[in-house]
Length: 198
Image (cartoon, rainbow, N blue to C red):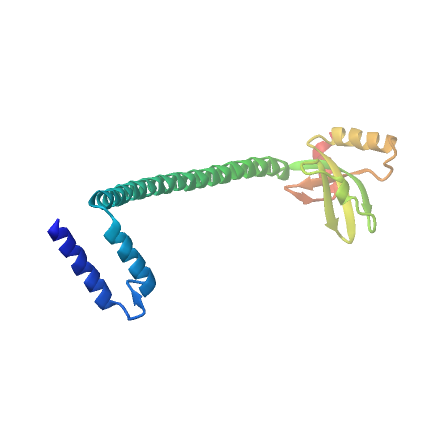
């Protein structure tokens, strides 16, 4: 018991001499006197309970810090997993887009090789119907020679293209005519008619 009192007096004296004259350990003189008085009035049992409570709270604080550290590690693991999965989704999406592009290109390449007959509906210099066509439509719109040309259908057989043209004319598309394309480039009809008409 004497040792504890001596230790408290030494600590108090050290704090007192290391502080400015206006404050003691961050307290004003009045506050220091008040706390000093409360300390003197405290029983050894109350001081023991206070120290035990402090130790208990310190241990709880340590446990909570460990839990926070563990949770932060788990968050980092999950964030890394999310990043990995996001990269995988992007990679799969890119692969799927490349495959789709390759399929479209393969289909387009098929129609760009050899002789193909298309039916041109009209060629206007002022009327623009582009906003009426949907993505993936078989209608092609071509800016060429100062005209906006509208082409509908692709046929390997001239007779099928001619039949389609006649049906279009029957429904009122008077300017429908057949335009041949060879290897993706437009050619004159007279150049290829001998190849298709027997």
